[in-house]
Image (cartoon, rainbow, N blue to C red; front, side, top):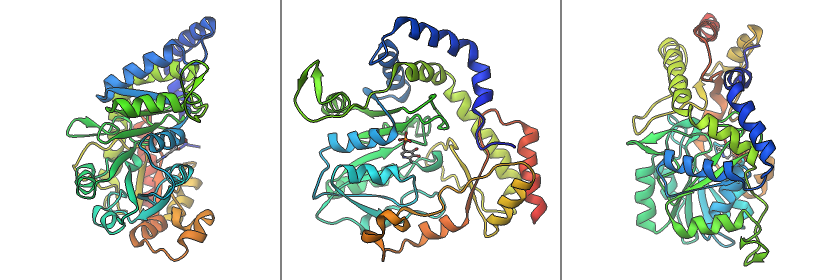
Length: 362
Ligand SMILES: Cc1ncc(COP(=O)(O)O)c(C=O)c1O
């Protein structure tokens, strides 16, 4: 079966480097906040063009701690998308703030700025913009809204490591950028991992303390914090993969280009809005015939996935709050979307097998 993402090929290619560096880290035994963690943070900050990169346990924690450090809490409202992984909204709930879902643009799948503006009221404190599937959100316009209404902008860059707008990296375009290193992400480790990026010294200081039990000096605790550190072995993997991220993203874009050239007449292919560089964490098409497509792909030993079948405001957990909320574009996209296999090592014959299988239906 052709998988959505094949991590085995990538490991085989990096095996020598990874095995050697993991062995060194095992021999060194500095497993918590060790040298690879700080080296990775410096290397990631330099790659992303930010003053601070603070690694944490996972992407959900990156969002949670960034919101806390930005002063978000009970009584506040944070506007975000309902077409994303639930962690984006959960993190807002963890702080005690209320989630406000705004509709998306049905072409880019990212927040639609005019819809965001409709959600702003006296309680609104922040906008949490997701760069969904690797395509940068309209950060300039969202920042203009934030300036107009005195709001904080935070990026969920979990799916967009290496994506950029005018050569500036996603995650560096707001008060704080939040990354996930879940194994299947564009930059993924071999377990859970995450990171917050910021140019603000106070936010950086606060996150460093929050991730480590509210302490900046051992056994001195000035607030209730968390155990939310990236572990040394994951940092080893990330340092190695960071060296290849541009190549990986270029290959993803190559695969996407071939898909789009060949599928644009039979389905709605991803729209690139030229605001920035899309890094295709997912290649997601829209079709009224998505069930037929999924069935044909499966029959031909090709995986596919629906990201996301149920928008967040329709999830059971949010029914008390959002039963009557209608988000037209979000709901329409969720009914038609289907994602195809995409990873840097995908071979031409595999790409064309996917294309020909889909074309054979129409
Ligand atoms: C958009 C988005 N936000 C947040 C997360 C949460 O990241 P993690 O799984 O590392 O906690 C993910 C990925 O899983 C994601 O895709």
